[in-house]
Amino acid sequence: MKSKFFLFWTLCAVCLSLISGCSGYEHQTIPSVNVNFTIYPDNVNYQALNLIGGHEYFTGGVKGIIVYRVDQSTFVAYDRACPHDWGIDDSRLVVDESGILIRHDTCGSVFNILDGSVISGPSRFPLKFYKTRYNGLKLRIYN
Image (cartoon, rainbow, N blue to C red; front, side, top):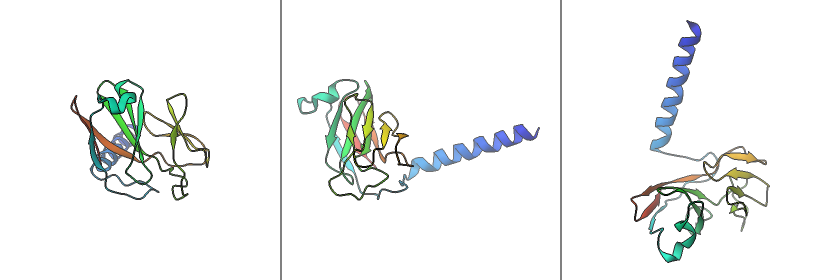
């Protein structure tokens, strides 16, 4: 009986943290800046985003933004600032040659491009993400 009670309250705590996290995302280390722009991924200016698994770099955020196309209708967007040492001048995250990892060459941290989680390195925090909304024609990146 105690284990069911513990499981119930654990699930409640997880659900509450997810709900509260959706309303106002504050990253643990990277400062918040206003991001709100729209692009047309099928435009010839963004050829890499025409393909699933493609990515493009944009200005904005703290150090720039990486936009990655997960599937036909899903995009993710991350700040190019490394959560471990975001304040280093001219240091930015990059998508590596594999197209599925994001690296920070200065500190050596490696992140999963699908969810921004830490794979290796000194970073203890995931990537700062921005919300995306795609209606089949235009993609909005915002916070």
